[in-house]
Length: 113
Length: 113
Image 1 (tube, rainbow over the protein chains, first blue to last red):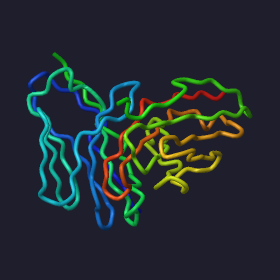
Image 2: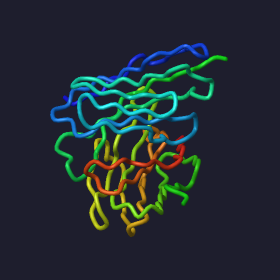
Image 3: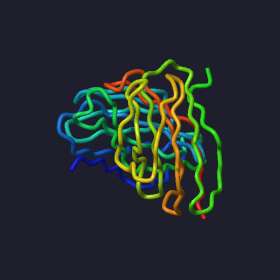
Image 4: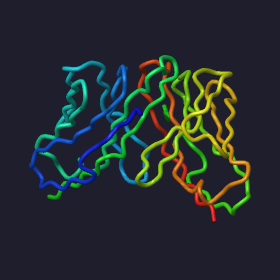
């Protein structure tokens, strides 16, 4: 069964304390892996798309990496405004023209000043 | 550009009532999606429309119907609401379904009593 699992469920960091969020997936023939940020009461906001193992993308304090089985979202020297839920999603196999996504349950990050 | 807009933002229904959730996008995207988000379940696809004039079932379509009114608008209808449909509903759009990023609206919070 196609599945996306994110860990940990929740993460508390002190401001400046770097860490990583994990997204492991079991899908055959990955077509794309997406990272989103979601603030309370709002819709998911797009962060990154990764397509192949070894690919990396960066945006400010965030860096996303991809292997054949998992993706990591590295947060370097986080600030309180980085507090949010981070969602990982993979494009479902066989959905070449539909873009159907399978989402993980998310990691809720809290950064304390 | 407003991106993806949804109405209403919040709605309370009684069991058995019907309602339509509206979604519109101004990005000239071809594909549109409806998701629901429940605690511990992540985002799950209800219905999608790969292009104007087509609609297909997603993972959890029971109890819902959709209409792709035109390229901009995609509505979700609950014919006879049930408490199990209490959730937060998100609409999303993408240029083409293949590998394109999905952009989400702000969501509609629905409570069915």
